[in-house]
Length: 108
Length: 114
Picture 1: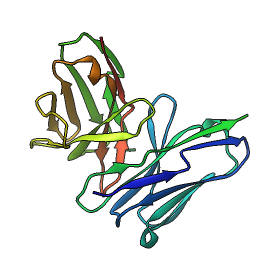
Picture 2: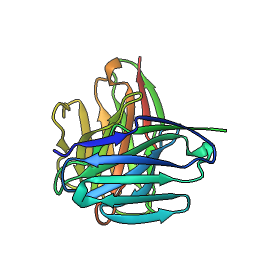
Picture 3: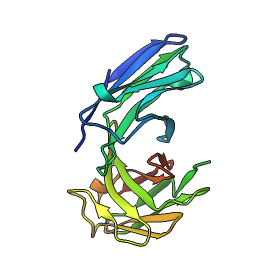
Picture 4: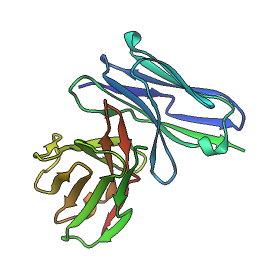
């Protein structure tokens, strides 16, 4: 099945800084999503983005399907952005596979 | 829209007992729901795919007799952990697929088996 990698595994930022999180996947994708898992465990949908670019406030994401990667941009980070960011993908008819996550800490 | 609930949010049970976890899609119908397990500081691992009106499909290594899944309606799937043991303690999360392929996740259930 598809394999999903994420980098960096851990990231510490000062409030107000910008960051880029990367997701690499091993095969063509039918679905790719970015999630934020808050400290209580809730997964919050950020983007459904199997291809192209989307923006939502301070967050944006770009997936280059032909090169098998996706990027999540966080601008002007806030302490509430802290948590774990996951990307997950599936390859037509196969299971939805989660990457290992990027643990983000935003310091005040 | 696209809200998924889970109940209970936390449960503590004794070894050998069974626990049922409910997953509901509140504002949409979901023919397919998924059950995941997450151990501390790890990623989510798919346990099974639940389709309304048919038997669940389990991932390799997941015991179907231990983790009973019932998808009785288009808005409800249940996971029953039978004869629970301490190693079953984990965070269980369900998701529901709305139109297309996008999955929406419930808030999770933290199971502790003593």
